[in-house]
Image 1 (cartoon, rainbow, N blue to C red):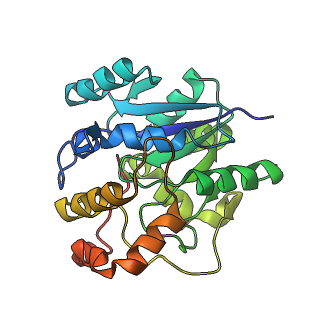
Image 2: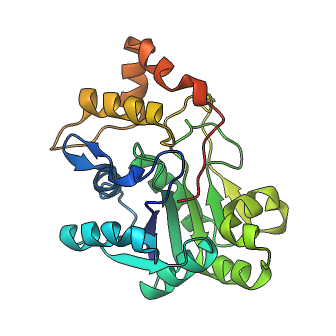
Length: 246
């Protein structure tokens, strides 16, 4: 069976919301909550943090060491190189890419993406964003290490090397891709973290649903929003303004 690891992209240099991955929710940094949620995945061999060598990200390394979370540090802008070398360091056949923009990441969705990857041996890229049906902020990709190597060799443009996932999605017919979707389109919902209003929204979700003994899932959030529709308006003005480069 292939070894599959999760790489949490995280860095401190966000322009719109500086140091967002270390912002506190219920006395824990957001990065801790992302890691804690991913621990509930059934099909993952390792969870690591992939940050940059920028001195600003020393704080992330300090956090990882304190929490005993595996970490890899690589180029800040050349994301393809950072993730490929993280995959090599931990001996992964494929990575699951999760960004620091996703504090509500759902391990059930991640497991489904991994399942789809495993049952389709020809596939090298599985995503739930080729055709969006999940809330913005539950994005994930499974990417084979072989594809990372291919892209690292092929892509010479600096922007493409930084935003290589966008390149794959835009040119998905060139690669062996698969999409994971659901019957109900919820892509109009904004659950990502990029602005202070997003942070306020995410805090409200955690304050109402978080429990130490278990995590909450997409369905729990949907039920909360159905009962409290005013929560959706907190960050609604930023819809279609998200970024996924961490």
